[in-house]
Length: 160
Image 1 (cartoon, rainbow, N blue to C red):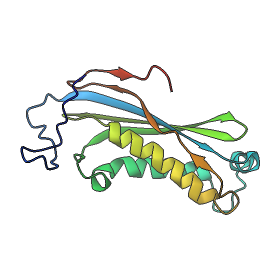
Image 2 (image 1 turned 45 degrees about the vertical axis):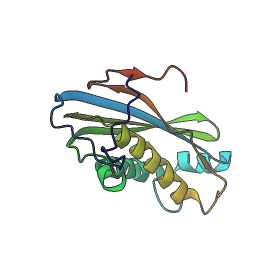
Image 3 (image 1 turned 180 degrees about the vertical axis):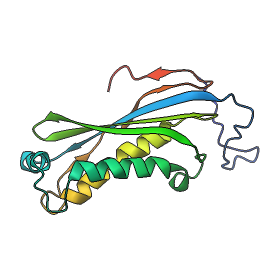
């Protein structure tokens, strides 16, 4: 792994990395997040009894939209033509919802930030839709699970 930071110019000021000489490769990143809540809140999500609507459907759309807009909110991210985005939810236990975001592209730079942004936005949307009944929800951890493609090679988290 290269420990050299590439987001600084010769004056040690932030810059967007020049990827023009990099190879185009298929790139996939998977990020995960969690949101813990009261068991009653998660039960109401499962049963579709949240007043604002279908929480997971809205969170899924929010995650997709966030991935597509990552370059607009993370200053040094490149605008990327994303070729696939998938957001999946699973019930870890009676009070925790797991979120997995998979983002794909064929390009010169990776989609790790897009996957992390998607997972985060999905979790934040769940919080927003349920905060009237449960302000104590906790988001996280959020982390990169894996990434494939590119010069630095593949990465698979050994433990979460």
